[in-house]
Image (cartoon, rainbow, N blue to C red; front, side, top):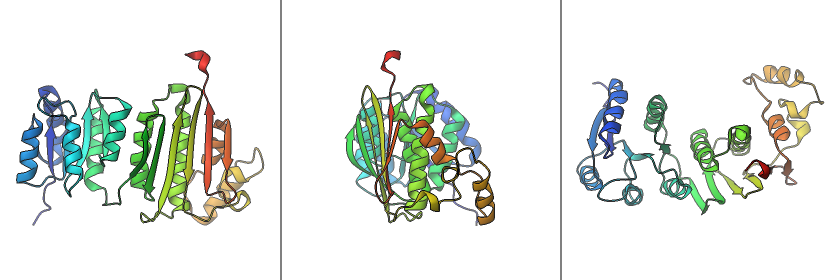
Amino acid sequence: MGQQRKSILIVDDDPEIIRLLLRVLKADDLDLTTVSTAHEAMDLMDARDFDLVLLDLGLPDKPGMEVLEECSRVDGPRFLIITADDTSASMIRALRDQAYGYVKKPFDPQAVVELVHEALKAPELPPIEVISAKPYWLELSVPCSRNAAERVDQFMRQLSNLPEDLEQVSQCFRELLMNAVEWGGGLDPKRRVRISFLKTERMLQYRVADPGEGFKFEEITHAAIAQAPGDVITHTEVRAEKGMRGGGFGLLLVKAMADELLFNEKQNEVVFIKYLDTEKK
């Protein structure tokens, strides 16, 4: 017997969006159902099971966010928000109500297809917990898994909304987060990394605390930052000897990009600060 087809409910009142999503997803052997109102969606989800719901927030009869909130209280399908609402408040609320991802219209159809398949294949994990939900002070508790870290990274990129010349700041946060879940948390989803993002007119601050025992720079010989200035070879040889993938430049990039980079005594918690050029505004 063949594998059961994955079922997706598309909830959007824009016929063009419906047609686009049907066109890009129909080639992937998915069971696709469409509705245009929140009440139709709720009735269908009561009547049958879906693996994933693609949900617009601006529905004619009821806000899509209320649908997400109601469904987050019970075991049900995963939700991928696809909406023109690009406000920080909506993104944070969607994250708090365990939306798998948040896509702003207009969107890249191929990127949506990839996110849909990721959401359908992702393992069950403990929830991402929202500790502080202010746009200028977001604080999260994240399970130590690559999947959860990838989701948080995508939410944070949209929330921070950095100009192109500061795109590397987002990459620095990703590096710190991935190090925390991989090395500090050992990719154990029962353990958690706590992160915070603070934003003012003059400053961006990321704080990442992992549950590990910390490290010393002289011990991480597989990283470029542990070598003498200008030595970009030794750490690659160490990585090859240990059978590790190429790379090892992440912390060096972080150090170069940060205006201030502070570690606690154990070095299992780090604060990254970038000052903003307010004269460009």
